[in-house]
Length: 148
Image (cartoon, rainbow, N blue to C red):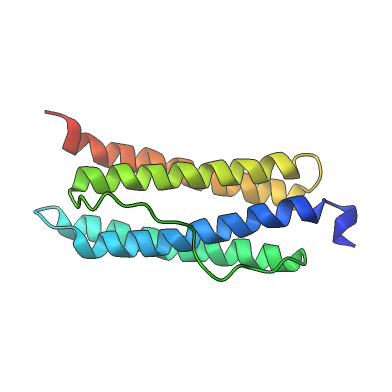
């Protein structure tokens, strides 16, 4: 039984929150890819589309683990905050905030999995690494819009 490996009643709500956050990321990044304008539009649109695609993959991964542990995925998405400021700087700042919230969720999962499930620990660590890389990349993109 899975409960003998890890307390699923603690893990499944976090996995569900991860799935909802990642699904919100699909909407967020798709929206950004549509509203970006200016001379750097094309590479930024491609970047945002890649982020949306990756968020969907992450949502599916979390959902598969969630249901594998006997949980039931919520139909919906996490709340999406938006400033309605479509400048590149605002979009990147909102994106970084979104990625940091996802990082917090994956870190919560890691805490629950630590010394209980190698699989969930490795999954959480991998996702944390990917989310940290996203924050690093977005901070590098942001430099062009904040130096001056």
